[in-house]
Image (cartoon, rainbow, N blue to C red):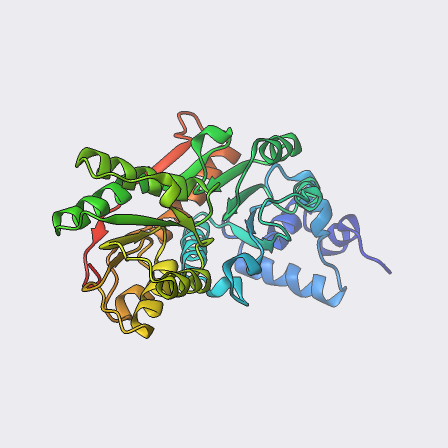
Length: 343
């Protein structure tokens, strides 16, 4: 016999509401005795009765689960996206905040870094698997943003422009880059260049803006045409510097890389060519990943506040989902430079 909630209530002599509260792990919250809880659970187990998770979700306003959408692994030049320091730390921050709020989260990896296929996002939300979505590592152009908003899913983007029409959480990349460039200038470097990540990336644009405006303040000439891009990847930055060295072109006194991974690739290429850092070229990065501390020379950088990004992204999305008043929809975290031996 397939047991229904009505049948269970009749045979146990317990109300359907009480049984539902017990099976939904709310016995303590509603002061149901441990003895009654155990009786109900044992009976349900004996009768092989379990709650219909999907039906429960469809009748709940919130399901207590968030979606985390990450870009495809190949754009990082690594085999496992979870080995990326930024992503691992951000997920750690989300996990800590979710635990405190008694929430869960699910992670999906997109097939494209521009999220061109959004059907699965719509299905994820409309099937009541998630209450909202956190995006990280994507470039949200207007068409994609419009499609996401049309789905109706509450959304927070990490590291995106506040002009995209969705709530955002990010680090003050402009300020970090500005302060780091001023540090390089204070060390006497007057020939500086910038190695960008992805040209369309808001993070890259803000880091370049801070770099360029610090140079302008000190009346140091620089042309944006001199900027090269290496997709935020260590291997591409390494290859770029190898070609620079082979070309015989004179090196600048200092190179500001738009992230630490590229800076590490550059330093490796310089060292293999017998160059010294910072003697032949000072190198700085951004993000403050762990590896930057352990390479030789240790890397000058500024902090990307990864764990705090994750926590704030969760908190902001939680507020959006619960339609709280007075929400600051664009959270910008302060950052500080970390000066080490590479400059």
